[in-house]
Amino acid sequence: MPRESAMSIETSTSTSANVAEVDIFDPRWWVDGPPHELFARLRAEAPVHWYQNPDGTGYWSVFRHADIHRISHDSETFSSARGGVYINPDQVVPLDVMRTMMLVMDPPQHTRYRKILAKVFTPASVAKLEEGIRARVTRTIDKFIETGSCDFVSDVAVPIPLGVLMELMGVPEDDMQTWFDWTERIEKAVRVSESSAALDVFGEMGGYLAQQIERQTTEAVEDSLVMRLRNAEVDGEQLNELEIVAVFGLLAFAGNDTTRNTTATGLLTLLNHPEALQELYADPSLLPGAIEEILRWTTVVQWFARTATRDVEVGGKAIAEGDKIVMWYGSGSRDEAVFADADTFDIHRPKPDHQAFGGGGRHFCLGASLARLELRVTFEEILRRMKDIELAGTPELVPSHWAHGLSAMPIRFTPGPRLGLDD
Image 1 (cartoon, rainbow, N blue to C red):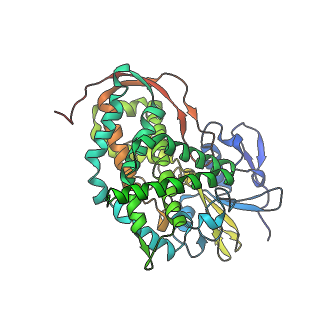
Image 2: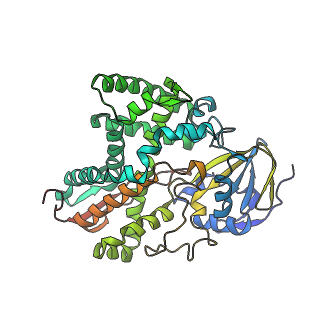
Image 3: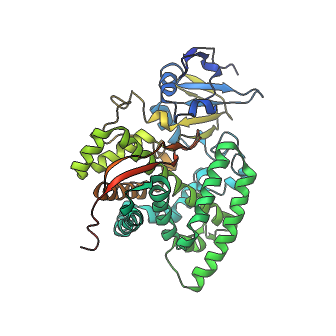
């Protein structure tokens, strides 16, 4: 089918390029993080953008909030299952394996599987976790507070959400490094299409999960996520081993990596906007709104893909059945049509309809309530106990077009008091 004619667009390096030749996945666009200047030009000039690979294959990209919202809410036309949620169907693991994950299911199968975990992540259920999460944040900060410095990524952003998830799963926290290594290897597989590496991770997870099921059964653990998976039924049948491992793997990655990266990039955002940080020190009650703006501003998961199940029009462009469509959430969260002064970080912004948790619809992030709670509690304790925070070195970006995150961020601060839990 005929594709778009060429348009000109200025790149971030001030050289001229042809829109038809702009490959948004090119690592050069991502050296300094998400290419928001390029996103803005594409929203204005090519909001539904076709890129053709040298081998003749190609993909559509959508950059506007409204188009992402529409695609996310129409799973009949834009399928997660048909071609997977990545550009290459076998990008992480073979598609047949990926289809055992809720991430790569369409209704009604997706609906049935989501019910297994939905009750754990309702706002009411999550609210009951606050005391335990605050105790965890306090213990984490206690480990380094008197030194007046830390690597914020490895000392705060990594252990808190990962520890919360491991507690929910009912697995030993001594295994935290193993879990962290799994998430790193899966993220790398997404970034560089190393499906064999991810398969190795799934194999390791399978062996570990079998051990945990045996241990928790022996110890009569009843309400952990591991046992929920073990005892769950879909259409009257228990999940098989591969299905359990797939959900387990999704939780290990999605339940940890996104919150970790939002915590780290969120603090960096506040350090880059010191007026906002000082406002929060003076009035921590502003944090819930600030968290929403951090989510909008950072939008750490940059994209997922869908496959068109029929010929359809999006943004005036003819999408053919079988075409791959990539939704760029980082662009949608900065869409000028939705957000006034979209490129201004504003902690007083009315609750923004950001796309940090996806574009809505059936695949809206199951753990959104838990992520918000973890972020709020973490930043409340940071503001209370870590004063005068400043960078003590250069933050290190994760070289990724998929997950916007940091691998290191050294900071220094003035230690504040330990109050609250024991007083």
